[in-house]
Length: 288
Image (cartoon, rainbow, N blue to C red; front, top):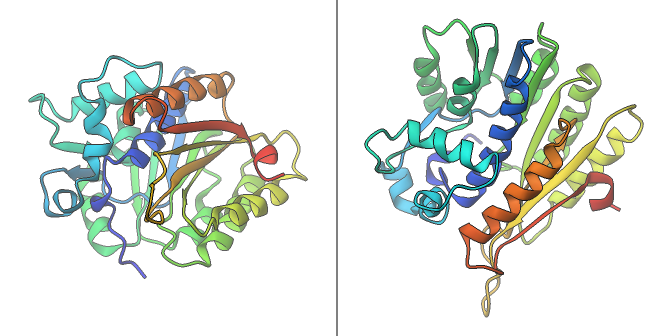
């Protein structure tokens, strides 16, 4: 449908949770000298203007990155993430928010590679212009489901695959799970991140159950869920997202402990103490 524009949601609490996890994973990859690749299947824009029309209309960043701007330093992952966002705002005022392509680019070394894909024509043009001239970056305009099968086995053995669809169409909950499972089979040593919204209809449960079933027969595949949720609405039925989560496949050693600490810290600082919630469980346990 190509109507989704992430600028309306840039820097919101779901973005913060997702990008803290991505920043942590990139940190793990960069600790070893061997080169790595990052594949962002639904890349969106590289950078978002929080004073622009889209972000200014919803102002979701006020319940996200803005609440961390003057917060005390958090645990590993959170502190690195906030520091990186500050690098894009040298004046000290929160004006620009980096998307996952920009965060990944910060982590790249000369031998690393960043493969970006975006089908929306406006976002693709902005992304292509942003990456132009950097030989480490390749930008594609393809169907992300097809791309996962075609480009998920880069020449580099180490890497991260980020799958962050808009879920505009209900069928995506089925097609994304199947495509991701195929990608894992093709490149079993990669690290995979699948983001999903938690809505009233709870369609994510079918997505996670399908993925868990598809991964069950694979050797040495570990998958965990990190899920964050704001305080529940009282009185009126909940509108919009009730939470957001990610499946992390092949998480690095000690990542689970770092993400547990980061998620708990985010839940305390994004919302009043005791209101926000974070949990970290294995995918098999979550879907049992």
